[in-house]
Amino acid sequence: MAVSQDRIILIFLLALAVIIFPAQGHGASIEYEVEIPTLPGGLTPLLSSVSDSVGLQDNPPDSPGLLRRRMAGDIETFVNTLKARGYFKAEVAGEVDTSVTPQIVRFLIDPGPRFMFDRPRLILEPDAPTLHDRLRETLDRLKSGAQYSSGTVLDVETALLERLKELGHPSPVVRDRKVIADHATNKVEVSFAIDPGPAATFGDTEILGLEDVSAEAVNAELAWKKGAPYDRRQVDKTREQLIRTGLFRSVRIDADHPDGSDTVDMRLTLLEAPHRSVRAGMWFFSDLGLGVTAGWTHRNIFGAGQELRLDTEFSENLQRANSELILPRMWHPRQSLGLSAQYEHELTDSYEATNLSLSAIARRPVSELQVGYGLAYRLAEVDKDDSRRFNLFSVPLLAEYSNADHLLEPTSGIALAARMEPFTDIGNADTSFVLWSLTGRHYLPLNKNRTMILATRGRYSLLAGASRDNIPEDMLLYAGGGGSVRGYAHQYAGELDENDDPLGGVSAMDFSAELRFRLNREYGFVVFADGGGAFSDRNPSDKEEYFWGAGAGLRYFTPIGPIRLDVAVPLDRRSGVDDLFQVYVSLGQAF
Image 1: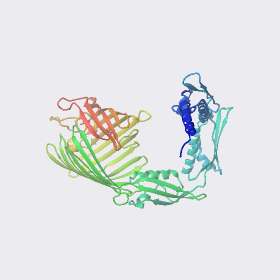
Image 2 (image 1 turned 90 degrees about the vertical axis):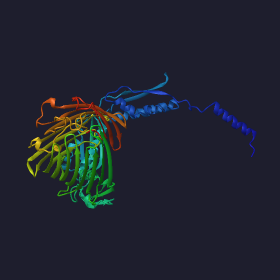
Image 3 (image 1 turned 90 degrees about the horizontal axis):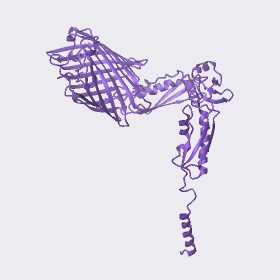
Image 4 (image 1 turned 180 degrees about the vertical axis):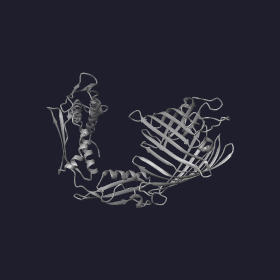
């Protein structure tokens, strides 16, 4: 269809007008800067963080009107933010200075005095004086005379509801919350009106999602009992215990409490984790050479949470194979029994030893500790100047505590372990002694984002009750190496014989301080210093007997833990004995 010449001319003129006279505002964005006065108590960065004028500065408006509208929105936001911090008399104004380029959005702020909390009030509906008294400690977190913060009010409100759930009331409801600011006294009165709801007890428990794990294994981890008063802490404890078993990838616990009911039915929805896992590792220490490790675990081998672990380690000087079967809930709901068998062959500069060890050790939590006790047998053949055989029975007793936040890359917390184990040789009464051992580790973050950590550790061990000659050489105490005093070869931080081979001691002490820096997501480095030694006396005190080493290392962080490369030098180097330096490569931190 033909297009008329008049229409063609009209379209051409319109296009030309668009090119010559572009729409007003497009391409005319108003660049600006923002001025917020310096205010006390960290208010300036707080207001900057909630300001659209600041946050959208890289996206400037197209007209003066839009810029003023952005500023007006900030004025309202600033007033509300200052009130939330207790500045109820704050005055906020703004202006746009168009006399300069770029223009300036300038805020004029007088925060006024910061209001203080008055004595808080709690109203229970219906009234329950005994329950009110048990909530007083939680309510008193709003301390009279403390600086007002809306965040504190919300935190205390949440804490009151959680406390009621710990006291047998599963469905409390906040009916009203009043915050009244008295401009005459500059105080804020906060009152909560809460309906605790009916008291209730635990009812039936339903378990969903089980495939290979038995319901018995799950029921054994329940912290609550049917008919007991409802307590939210028992729910959280159950979730923690189920996750700790390693049997489940996820644990969800729902409480079903119909209105007016005096029972709470519990529903557990579980997703089982893979029960089998394979692990492998490799290390290189310049004093010991190359080593490899491998292992296999089945966490549910008999269907009720029993765990079987098989591990092996192989290097030029050490071959080890270990198996352990862990049986949960043995003789006590929180007690496990570990049955272990181990074969080991070790060749050092001082001796060659082959031993077979069997043990049965029960473990259970006691308050914040993990304690253990059991029986063990060790058949050993040790060849130094001549070959000797030992048949050792022992009674290991141990106690452990740890609140470290991570297994392979801890950044905070402490870990302590104590062990006492009396040994006796059924064929030689002179070979009876007691091993005492105390170890500790501490991790201290030096900045908020935990990229700089001060890690320290210490160990003291003692063999009491027998002379050094009556103790198997592979059970004497040594120091030196990648897990002890770095910079010295394995077992060489101690006394030497006439051939410059380690003698071993009846006591040993070593300690380390390591400053760890994380540079980014993948890399970090450390500097460290170690000290210690192995001693023929039970109470070493002469500082000249200690050995000292220092060094630095790199870390490459992986999803399964950091790979470490450490280089250490001996500070008390003995000519012809100690190398100039030692190198250590392995998975995980040094301690």
